[in-house]
Length: 215
Figure (tube, rainbow, N blue to C red):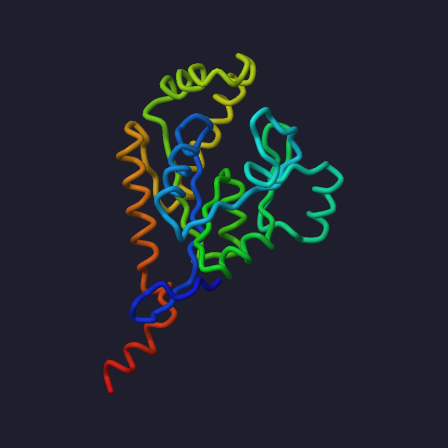
């Protein structure tokens, strides 16, 4: 999966598929927004979902909202890089948009759960970088969900149960961070992205540069 040349030496490099996962309320979405605002060569993958649109959401920006039948048709046509059931609804990453972003010289940011991260890694392997963000404690996570005031007590309870299951998959990630300070966590995420972009395995044009150097 190629990203175009942004290197002064003409190395070129393979695009990074950068996954952020966390339990709901651990700060993943805040960090993703900050990362997109600070990284012009990074674009957000917009998932398709069967869940109803919420007040303030925009179709095509927050999610691609589709019917269950349409989602099933997309699965049958192999149009997703990954998809999963989450809280009674289906979510999936359309292949075409990711390929278009990589073709436009963008790395791609994914806000997906451990199931999606696993599927994406199985398909794209070394192009995938997986970062899991933990809350400082489960008590703090519960308090954040309450303060957010977007869910009923029943939904918060379900999210907390799911959070325990999600945390158990921490070892399926390349990096694990604790978000006890959002600015510090954000800086760590930026550092990871910068280092991964510089990995030798992604520098597809370095061999040509070395050959010129050794003439």
